Length: 98
Image 1 (cartoon, rainbow, N blue to C red):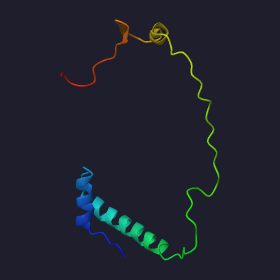
Image 2: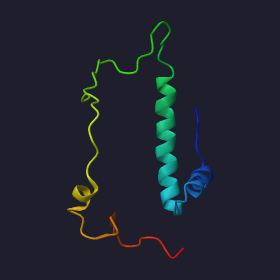
Image 3: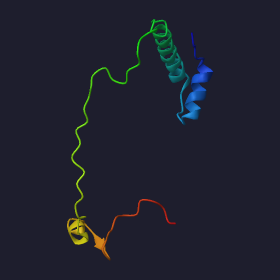
Image 4: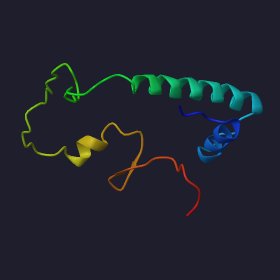
């Protein structure tokens, strides 16, 4: 049975850039060990001779026909834009200076 220690949980938190308090690490240790026990229990189920499936229910993908059409005219595309300049969309800068 796989078991997680509090130190391993804190290391996982560090790798995921998640700061964990001691109480959170203790709580997650318990939860992860519970999940590991459930997985170990599932591994005891005999599956010899059972064909793997991706989905037990057949699902059909409904796609529209791929029909070539002329592209949207630039002026039509820019018509509802809040701001344009030189035939392009204008948006506020979201990254720092380059």
